[in-house]
Structure formats: structure tokens, C-alpha cells
Length: 100
Image (cartoon, rainbow, N blue to C red; front, side):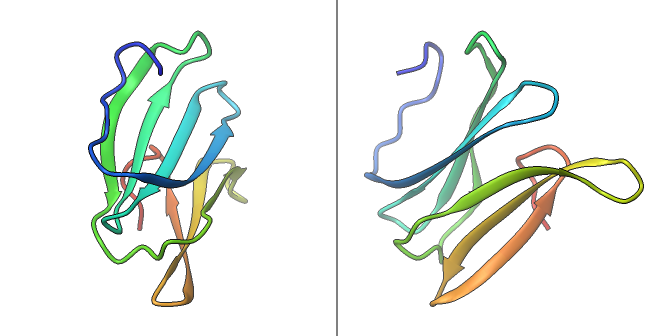
């Protein structure tokens, strides 16, 4: 358990973790309720962003993936991949919380 991290009432089914180019740690997990959550930590495991819902409902009970990338214009972004109704969904974010 990470000190200061919010505990989650539902069951954690799958996790994905990425260490960004800035050394922040993004920990994602899906729950038995079909949500996808995130907690963001710094390199000392201090909480930078407490637990937040990234996707509310509709996430299949299947593995998830996340990676840190840089766009052609040099902008940092996270790529999040998960299954919804059996189809792969790929979303992008510059803050790790709000995905489009």
C-alpha cells in the first residue's frame, strides 16, 4: 500500500504501470464494476494525484496497457489501451487522468 493512496472498495482485476519520461509513476487498474482508475506517484512514491476514475463503466474484465510516448511535435502523452465490449479502445492523455 502506498502511503496516502486512496483505498478502493471494489476488487482490482488487472493493473498497468508506466514510469514517465519525467519519472512520475502512473498506476492504472480496472475494477469489478467496469471502471478504470489511476493514482499518480512521484519517484519517491509520494502521491501526486490521488485516485481518480479515468473511465467510468464499460471496461471489460481483461488486461489493460499503458505507455508513455512523445508526439511528432515533441509533446509528452500517455497511451491507454483496454477492452470494451470485446473491442480494443485506445485513448490519449497529456496529464494521465483525462483521456480522449
